[in-house]
Amino acid sequence: MSILTSNNLKDQYSTEMLLHMYEDMVRIRKFEMQATVCFSAGELAGNIHTCVGQEATAVGSCQALEKTDFITSTHRGHGHCIGKGAKTDKVMAELFGKVTGYCRGKGGSMHVADLKLGILGANGIVGAGLPIATGSALTSKIRESGEVTLAFFGDAGSNHGTFHESINMAAAWNLPVVYLCENNLYGVSVDIHSVINTETIAERAQAYGIPGVTVDGNDVLAVYEAVKTAVQHAREGKGPSIVECQTYRIRGHYEGDPSSYRPKELTEGWKKKDPIEKFRDHLLKLGVSEDDLSAIDTAMDKEIKEAYEFAKSSPYPDVSEVTLDVYASENERSVIR
Image (cartoon, rainbow, N blue to C red):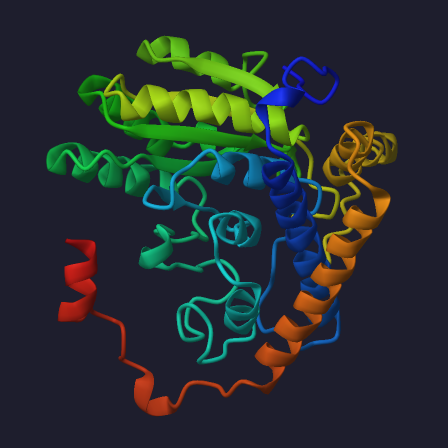
């Protein structure tokens, strides 16, 4: 399903909403590119996995959620967290291991979390966010709070036991959860179609008697519409759905990955379907001015520069904090309750 190729829905979105979505996509792209520069310069410890090329999936999904809803994320989660409302300076500080980061520098690139924003945590273990999201949804159902949880996972995660166990439980108990697959075609170097026997991952929903849909993951409005429908389905007590967003990571699995396993023509073809350029062209056709879009680009350059300077100048946590946050404090438990 593609929305950007049709004008049928253009009157359903306010200009403010469209520009907000564009701004978030640009914000994520510029954040990720700055992170790659920092990593190449040796300023970041460990490794990072960027979502360059997948911004439409993150933004379209999070735009369909309420602030009170929850997400679980993956090792490629900066974009998800920013899409859900995380501030770029605090995310950048977390990548730098600084005390001003969301996890006070202890989570790093793959474990950003903030319960107040509904971010239950990115996760370095493939498929590990799925059962966490299922547990969150069970909690919401027991409390009758009306909240929905969305679990981001990659194509490779669909072959893990956590995928099947989580969806089976959610389907059996009609839990308010959406399973959002970012199918970027490769799990590290493994072509997804060499390890599954279905045309799409969303088809697997049939085995559990739940809705499953596949959309163009580089079309932010198509993602938004699909997730909005799935969220409404969950919020009405009708149970889970699978939404598969077919997209592509332009950069390697991790920074420094030569990606020699991917055909060059495949990557070049996906670059021509860049989600930001695609959405920019759509906005221009709708009458948004080039000046307005350029102003957003400039503002995001400034924001990311300031985020970098904030992270760079922030202190590292003191050694006395080594056991801090290992257990939830009473205040933190009250937030969870």
